[in-house]
Amino acid sequence: MSDYNLVLSGERLIKFGSNAVNNWEGRVSFSTSTGYEIDPVASQSWYSLLYVDLAGTAQSPHQILTYVDGRGGVNFKVADRMVISPFVYGIFRGNYGIGANTSAETGLGASLRGFFDEDKYHAPRDAVELLPRLGYTVHDSLATPSVVFSITVVARF
Image (cartoon, rainbow, N blue to C red; front, top):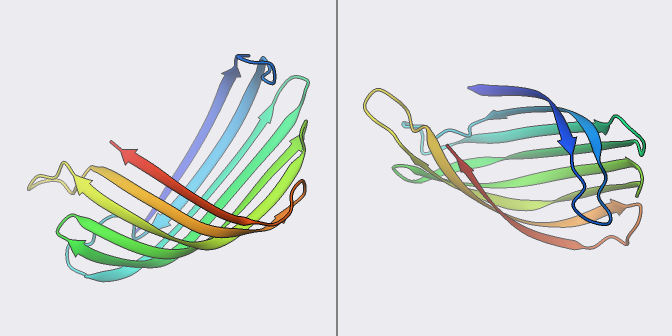
């Protein structure tokens, strides 16, 4: 089953440092995924995720920021409430304004997810995810292409 999320927000940026600015920012974020939740029956299923984030500042200095992250892979159920999902991914980042830069990255990763807070009437509502990635920057307008490694921890409550 696919999940869709759309978030619209207005944010106040407050200067806390020499490179920061006081400004207002508008943001639109969209995501969709399939196969994120644990399948109680299947030991293997498909996994995909698309996340798009667009933001812009209202006052000078104006900036438009973009971020797109796409993943696709296979879920393997390794325990009753645990799934590992190796995947391929692609990321695009764009900063149009002060410090303008665009970059694109692609590579391999794995999502290890554990699910919690389940009872006989509800599916697991909470999850913790460990997300290591190994990729290559195929384009960067300010730097030479390079190998990229990252580890992200996500807690969902």
